[in-house]
Length: 205
Image 1: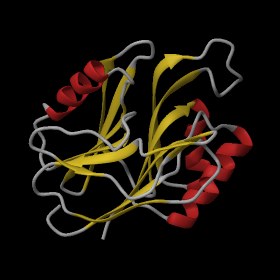
Image 2 (image 1 turned 45 degrees about the vertical axis):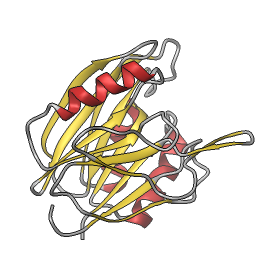
Image 3 (image 1 turned 60 degrees about the horizontal axis):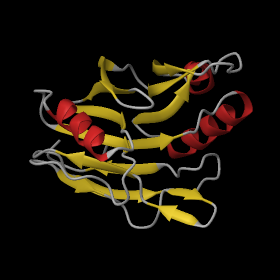
Image 4 (image 1 turned 180 degrees about the vertical axis):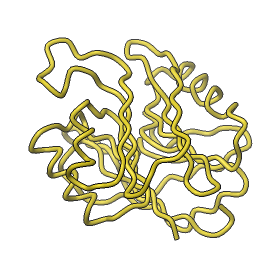
């Protein structure tokens, strides 16, 4: 049963990236999707083995070495297949979608914009990708996840984002017909303001 872990790691680098790697090692997903990653995420290969891809979305002026751009990353304990990135635009921070294949499934890592019309346009753009079945997952920046025609929303119980007393479910997934999610849950961690989300895929993928 393949497992996916998606996590907004809030620009984790250096020691905090080491801690993220230790957490990931304990979960042992088949595919890791990271949002708000920085260049230092490329070190996951040396920390965990496998293969990592990082794609910058926008620069971080004055960032420390290894953290001069924010973007998206994928990691797998095995080889990553058919990795592609797509610029999605967005204001004030441009967004990038990062796709790969997991067996017969196309997986798209997303960090959507806050503005509703931008968010929906970004979803429509990635859903236009012809490969099916398709799973979209990441930080959707909308409480309770998103809706998209032809896709089923997957939003675990509980919350995934905290800021002070605020608790929101911002991290979610959308799946096309042919994808069965056998389980979805937020995992406990204080390494970021987001909790990681674990998806367990069942038959039909």
